[in-house]
Length: 339
Ligand SMILES: Cc1cc2nc3c(=O)[nH]c(=O)nc-3n(C[C@H](O)[C@H](O)[C@H](O)COP(=O)(O)OP(=O)(O)OC[C@H]3O[C@@H](n4cnc5c(N)ncnc54)[C@H](O)[C@@H]3O)c2cc1C
Image (cartoon, rainbow, N blue to C red; front, side, top):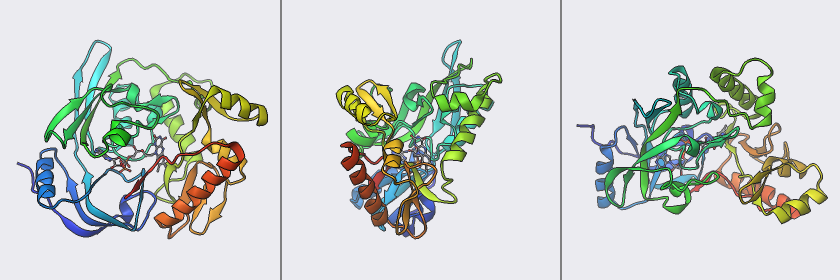
């Protein structure tokens, strides 16, 4: 039997979101085990209100006041079982720290997550936007997502196909965002290491020494520390805009006008490097009151101190407008604005 729900009101969230925004939740609770979710649902039936699931708060832009209930998912767990001669199944609780999970998997001789090192947040939030970095997306390593289905009021496993993963997108983010609470993620990891080195920056960073999983992990961490601000020092939510995908026609027109355009072929055309577009507008290091464009990586917006959601929205709109005027391309924010 798990502990009953502990509910708090007017709970401060500033320490629980990596932008460091001064949000306050109307109600707040912590979920340590999947069977507390039934209690959560019963409480919500008696007190109908919006529910925000919170992991590490690294992909959220919160308003000063967050109406309704914020439930922080802290479910732990680590279970491995054999899948085949070459692969192992690893089921990890939604509340486990993502980076620690990557590190521990490598220590246990399970490979496939190395390129996703140092992404902040929890395991349970990772499928929500199908996290990706350095040529690997989470969807390529997942065998199931365990969810509490709020519609059917039961726990069940969803297959990777059912999760409808896309570029920084999934069933959980844009198709049925209110329906599922992710309680665990099951990975299919290899016993034999195969390096994924399609990303040129990673290949260069590795140099000529033999490529081992630990070296890929360390190199990814080093590159990320050089390029991205540490949220414990400077508030941010990582890449603020998705890389826009444009048709092959539009790509050719832009390439004709801007010879150094940075873009990668994509299944639907070409993915343009949003950081390059922003940089070309002269916005690196630009600031508007409490928020700025990070000088070392134009894709990241940072809290310069005392920022509120409105400040971030204002700067984001300015960046979108400049990029639209110069390139005719619309940038779409990556983090979720709530409410
Ligand atoms: C410095 C920095 C670097 C980053 N780099 C990358 C990167 O390289 N690649 C990348 O893809 N992302 C990156 N991100 C974004 C972010 O880290 C990821 O999106 C991460 O998965 C968010 O995890 P979280 O636990 O902090 O989620 P939160 O911000 O708490 O929540 C994000 C969304 O998921 C929902 N959610 C949370 N937990 C659950 C759950 N258990 N069930 C259902 N829904 C849930 C929330 O309601 C919200 O909609 C970066 C962020 C920062 C700050």
